[in-house]
Length: 392
Image (cartoon, rainbow, N blue to C red):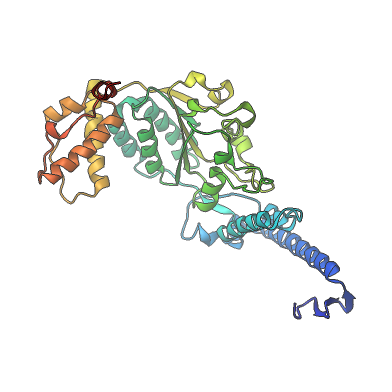
């Protein structure tokens, strides 16, 4: 192995502090030294944190990896000594692949550092919420609630802390689109999980560390890899979960939706490192909220979203049209939608409006027109008509 600060190898034996030891003993000595080094680093970190300011501690933990040039509030995501102790106590009985997986996570945590930004309210938050309400008039109750929560933040910490929000309503009323719009407003990271096909809670909180293919879950990944400690999580169709009781996909939410317990969230794949997940913005959608367990309902602020009125449907249609043009990056704006087009699409749910409008824009551009006609808005054939034509 060549000479190092502790010893060298001679004819298969190692010399440690002037004493010849067997390869097996040398391996144990190396491991003991690694443990001592890890504990020493943890003690040094504790001394820095206890004797210095939060700024000093943040700098010592490679703050500049995600907090460089950031003058706003920061949050300590995890304890450095838990990381170093977990490094030192990796189970020697685990196979090499499992140890390397954990080592890779350790390296990433060290590279990213223990601190994350906390996104604050933008100065024009009132105008932005007004704009969101114009785009989603049937969500005015949610916007009104956010106005109250944001006003509290403006006079306090500057970082909003609304309760987890449950958007309950029939399919197609714009719940997912509204959630994505809120995520853009916060601008601090976004993850959407479709819960309809969830069989376990692994996609959210990781799989058990003892499984050979164990991996971290979405909460751990978004907080560690992101720059912010308060990202937006959308859990779509939580009432459609069909997992077995012993693998309840919603079970992890009992702790995650409670700020007190979420402050020390532990991913099942890395259970010895606590992560502060208490600042996540949670948005849940459902078609039948009453199908959810009582403990979940007690932890959320529920809003029952009704289908838009005819007037609201036209307003939503126009906002979808504007956003589509921005998303497509069209160099020239199309002409406003005509009354004929509005009459065709105004009776549809927002999701369907978006689908047909996107196709209609393409037809107009193919014909080298800047105006969408009612003929461009071709409705998909109804399922009953398809079955009738093919003989079912």
